[in-house]
Length: 147
Image (cartoon, rainbow, N blue to C red; front, top):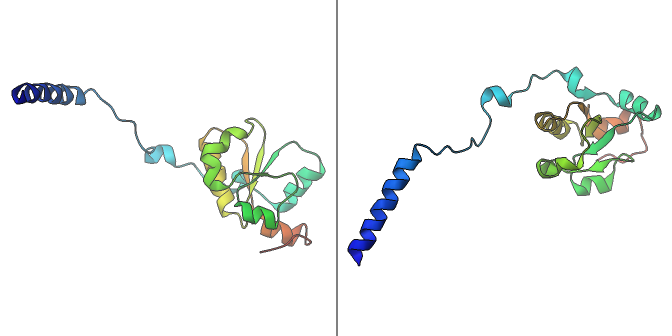
C-alpha cells in the first residue's frame, strides 16, 4: 500500500515540476514604468475659487469626498458623494466615467492620492481640491466648521 502511495506521489510531483515552467503567475504590482504617472499640479488640481465658479455656473461634475465617515459628519460640501479613500479601490465602479470628478479631503493629500488612483483606473477628468475642505472653509465659506 505504501509503495502505491509513494508511486502516486512521485507522479504528482513530476507532473508539478514539469508544468511549473509553463505556469505564469500574475504580477502583484505594476512595473515602475507603469506605476508612475507624470504629475502636473495644474492638470490634477483645482483651486477653491475655481470650484466655486464651477458650482455657480451649474457645471456638471461629481464632487467626491474621500474622508472618513466621522469627518463627513463633522462637515461636508453639499452634494458630495462619500467614498473613503480606503474603500475607493472597491467602490470606484459607483462613479460615472466620462463625467468630471472633483475630489476633496481635509487638506488635499488624500484627494491627490485618490485622483492618481482614479487616473490609473482609466478616469480621464479627475482633479483634487487644493487645500481640501479646510482651505475651502478659509477662502469660500467661513461658516463651515473647521477641525
